[in-house]
Image (cartoon, rainbow, N blue to C red; front, side, top):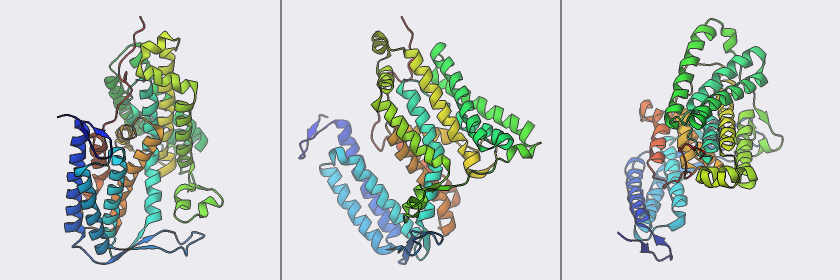
Amino acid sequence: MTAQLVATGEIRTPAEIKRARILGVLYYLLAGFVLVVFGFGSDGTAVFELTRDADRFSGFPDLHVPALAFSWLVAFILVMLGTVQLLRGFGSKTNIVLAIVLLMFVVAFLAWAASGQSFSMVGMLEETVKRAVPITFGALAGVLSETVAVINIGIEGMLLSGAFAGVLAASLWGSFAGLVGATLIGGLLAAALAVLAIKYAVDQIIAGVVINIFALGITSFLTGQILVENQQLNNSGVMSPMAIPLLSDIPLLGPVLFDQNIFVYMMFLTVAATTFVLYRTRWGLRARAVGEHPKAADTVGINVFKMRYVNVIVGGMIAGFGGAYFTLGSVGRFDENMTLGRGFIALAAMIFGRWNPVGALGAALVFGFADALQIKLGTLGTPIPSEFLAMAPYIVTVVVVAGLVGKSRPPAADGQPYIKE
């Protein structure tokens, strides 16, 4: 099969042609699903609440969506998009169209699920942002590590250890000490990973798995030996939200973005800072050079080992800080294995985001939405079994890793140890 020249003037490779056909068929299947399941369901109206009773602009009008009519409209649009996708494709806009398709499908699903009921869109989006926090921090740790060609499978262990150290230090000395303790323990585990992967050239996947197993084992042991017997050491409390004046009063977006605790604000600041450092500073340029061609970077005087050590350790500190969210930002106590695989979802978010901090944030929000969705739908009394709802974030992970959103290319030297000649 050879490349084809489409009407837009773009040349499509065989892989792009194959993906376009798969997406076209997918749009048809989604259209059929929407038509059969949602289009012949309840004909009630779903009311999406855009404000809360306590909000300053609580009188802001809600969004009323007729479930039946909207489902038919979405099915029609999906058929049209599927036809265009099969005939000529959307070129560079393929992922944008895919995002629009998935958004329409989700809204149609929510309209069907909330038909005849009210649904708090504010609460849904607020929960989405919260659940994206540890995934984003974990993904940023992966971005920093893999930018310099070190694969960090140990993110799960760093998140879990950060959660444990955070609650213990916060219970003893306060919330600030908890944040510091979580950050330091994440950096310590990352330093261990760096020594194994960089100095001793241990297989990076194996080294990361060792970190995860160690973190799970040591936190479980210490929980049984210390926290169970001393409940006062497992009672950190939850950090309160800090509303930003004026901005927090904006309908819908205000409570979601500007009335959160420190973890949410730090998430956005860390994404911005990481993006700036990687793409606007000399350090970032050198780090990306090390990830693409370490030998060439070494030839021009860049200390490859130093770059790798610093990036991996800083990434681990970010992951440790993110792990503290599970305890200090969410429930106020530590439970064994409470991260529940969020570190691995963070790796998927990193891949989905194409090893870019902003992309990783966007991907984390997608996973956070899937996670929040299964909780909110449980309150609507949908006929979908709760076990299937609990699978939602992991199904999204499989879809992303399978390459439906397009093939992502990691740094060229990713996972390869560098031995100086």
